Length: 221
Image (tube, rainbow, N blue to C red; front, side, top):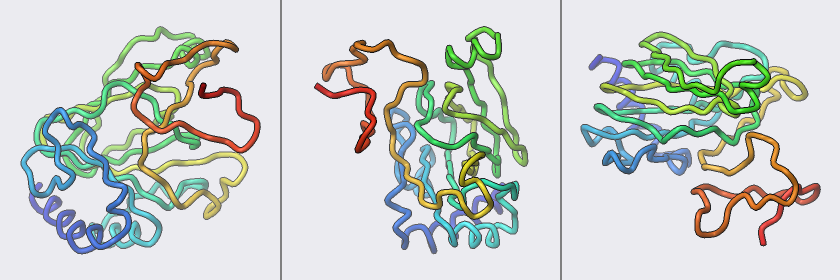
């Protein structure tokens, strides 16, 4: 849809390039020749985060509500933009604190490959098998990306937007965290026996280590 693509491009050029949110731009797949500026290339897959007021500006610009309007959703909006046939990062979980994330497919379609973590499979009494779900333009998908391994694939141009939702303490409307970051982190999705060496310097995965001031349950040696 050239009209939708043109609207998004004009907003990107007029707003995002002039804001600190540009610092959150992440290339989702370097191997596919992705460029941080997907509007200047015919192939690429990047993501970035819009904070607070710029989200409502984008909604107005696109004449489209990008929210389910439910308590606990963060004002910050994740944006995923892909050009051409492309794939995202390999199967992974996300180091987030949200209860779940919902994605709205604004343009094109995206196929999600999903696989439950071992702990989730045991709780649901299902096999740890992969399954594919295609989300078409105008559709939503709700997913707890902490416990579902996931990766995405696109056969053409694709644009989707996502928000994190927090239930429980601090989940009242307006009370959720407003500042998000777009940084890969490392954390355990399942219990690890005490004394286990999780990884060494030679085989350490890409991503930032998390640090806490007290109550740490692991150490770097």
